Image (cartoon, rainbow, N blue to C red):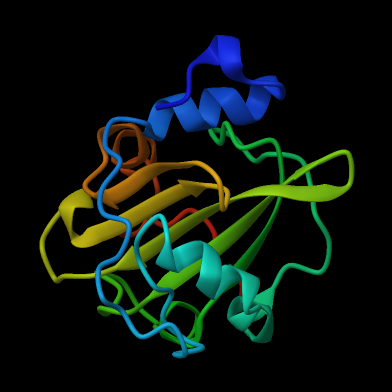
Length: 163
């Protein structure tokens, strides 16, 4: 778990502290080669991110400052096909996902990833990850710090969909 005293970047530390309630598994046995569905786990997800699969998704053109109520600081968001092509109201389908690159000094320093893993109501239907290849926080479903913020979204725990 990240503590604020151990953090170098205050905005990232606040975000990590909010999601640090659970650390989850290092691997959930997901397919690391599926370009549309992020793997889960503190070992597998960083490998999936490093492979660059999400870069083929629809991404915001440039990084930008946080949009309220985000604690994530400067970010760029990418949405997979299941998230961006779902129209209408209601829940996103299982497999819908987004990757948020978190920047410090013009470089990506961490990621925040959400993936709908079940049709369950509420934040328990979403997998949440925040961290780096060396440190994961919020690596589980229903993480209180993540769901507590994302429940404020106008649609199914998602603030931003990149069309």
